[in-house]
Length: 213
Image (tube, rainbow, N blue to C red; front, side, top):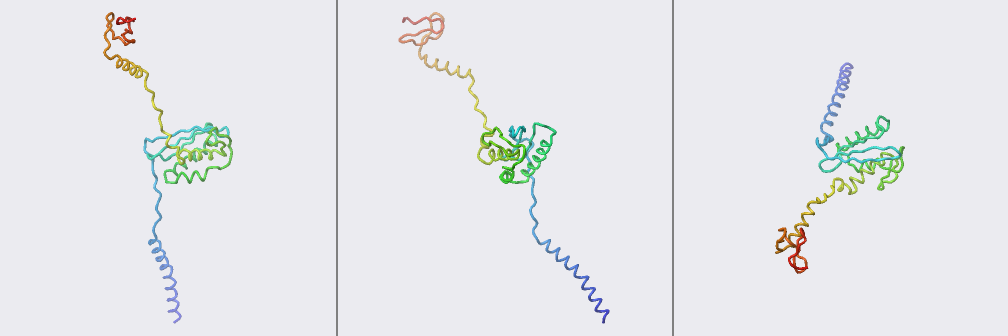
């Protein structure tokens, strides 16, 4: 009787881990999986915007590559002092922000997170719409917010209207003179068309008139 009880206990203890594993596996397979993030890549040829900035004596350029719909898709930050610690950190940070753009992180969240962060270098930026920048991050994300979230992106790619060429203006004036000639006669001395001068006609080439003084 004692041996039978021991075998029964061993069999029960051996089945319990297996049953718990199976139940855990069933629970894991039955739960819905979380959706995976999909990276949205930019086309090989894309529009971009380059902006020069200066904060606390630190100068640089920020270039924003755009998707087809005009939203930012990549960020490049080039500091004036190449090889410095600030330049390396900003380059690495720009890569991280570019990946965030391409994986669908909204620009508003990034602007809210990094705007008004305070660390050196800081100072007046020379940009009248931003003024004093508390850090490089503060300036860059406040500028991105102005350009892409507050209605100023519409003026990014406006091209100046070309002025009409000067020779076209001259042609228009000449045509106006021809229209004003009407039934003017030809000059009897040089053959050019005459222009009305009061009650008679006057030649603009040789200066002769059609009989009036």
